[in-house]
Image 1 (cartoon, rainbow, N blue to C red):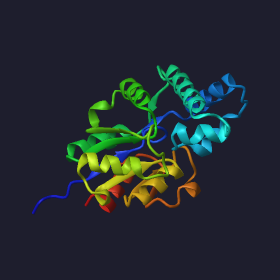
Image 2: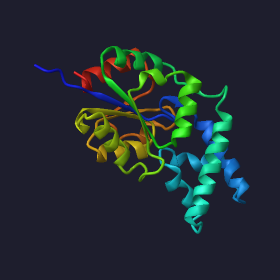
Image 3: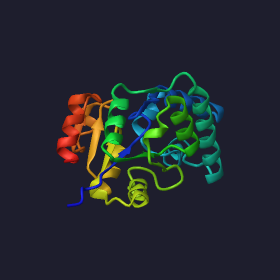
Length: 218
């Protein structure tokens, strides 16, 4: 009997890698360049979405060209902050190694542009664990399920066998809409904001990994 093939679809920012402060700081810098003063925490509720979805919330009358310009500037500011500051969350490396050893396909499924993904993977040295990289920067953003469904198609693994790991409500909703089970990690949001996930974990511990294997990968 053929063994079921599973895939792990990893969100990146706030899930794999601690980038929350860098993203908040780069949003503040980019907005200031265009005359908009915001507080860092104003951007937190929109994490998980792509810039095409976030930027118009602060500049509702901006043209598509200006939205693209502001978004690109924000990401350039973010990438300037990455060297020496991007840290993989504790326990992530163990999970990546275990899934790889078990032959489970792993993919990045991030709203970030590919330039950001490349910088972060190179900075943290975890690129070798991923069989595929999916960027949702230029497609309908989470909570739209397009990114997750695109990754499922690229991997040739049905959605129900794709386990999403997320930290943001928008990502959880996208996974649900894609008919994929989803594990939420409380890295950047409290459990009360993540209650729609199939499983909520506080850390990437060995005990939590065992839960995930039993519940979703058996």
